[in-house]
Image (cartoon, rainbow, N blue to C red):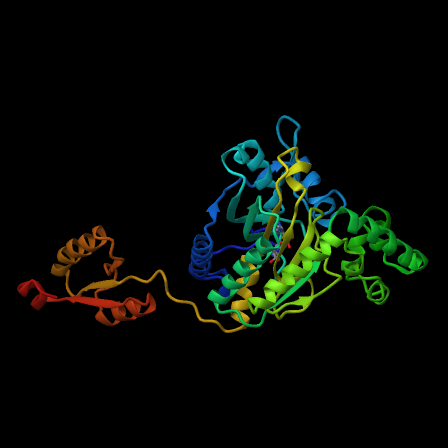
Length: 400
Ligand code: HAM
């Protein structure tokens, strides 16, 4: 029997993969830039486990969301407790924040994470059952400036990676008062069309009507197009917050498009929500998305501290970089490639090579082939900066 990787999953290898975005060196490069950007904005790394108690995501992400109701990998552990592979990173971070009483250390925190997430989605290009996110979460600053700093970090990441064909879409889902008023208005508007809507949207009508705005159902799109805009229902506080965000984005020359239909697929958002879209069409075009979530920590029984953050998919970033024909540096190449020309040079090659490595100089020693042509080809393939050829003359003069 030949084993095959389950559907919707993929391997990341140094070579031999089907698509260039699966090359491990590319992943390392992108992750390096992510860590550097995070560091430049004073963020600290968090690593939480890949699975948690199922209730955490039900409570945090929302029971009626697709992510929780349809896409979670849920299983019973040996003590019959329901566990789920994390579909996203925010809920776990909130759990860790509360569990470790981090609010006692400070009332302001800036975190980032890089890691795998799991969603049982219908696999297609850009959508996998196992994907990777770089995410950030800023806790304890309710100001609009924090929203803009969060957005700026995401845009700066894409800029450093060389991505150009991207656009920032932004909306406000307001505060509790806003959503309460809007929910009623939206339901009033939709009610007469209810029988025409997709089954999915009909199901959402009572429990989570805002998600209908996000529907991709063909029968829903023309109806949703004429729906009232949430922006006309913003409470004075919510309107001020959103206007300030837009003003600061303009001041910083960060272009944006206001999209009153942008609600995102997770329930915890308040005020600002945003998505950065790439070129490809459809659901997969979101390179990254996030927003403010001022009540999430309290929902989990934690302190009354606000939050704002985003998640961006590493697969989609790498694929967009390919589409934009962005070249990648060879970050894993040896600096020196030592090629002994004859049997007697092997000892010296090894001594030299090991010595260089002990001085942290990336070095490869050719011990397979005795043919210089082959060695040169190999060195070339590895993108070595220098080739040191060891022949009898070099050995005699002890010079290379
Ligand atoms: P999300 O929009 O669900 O947000 O996911 C963030 C990003 O992860 C997406 O924009 C996309 O690039 C990538 N992504 C999601 N699902 C898949 C998939 N099946 N295959 C490939 N890539 C995928 C969140 O997860 C929130 N936790 C973001 C956040 C953090 N909001 C506030 N803080």
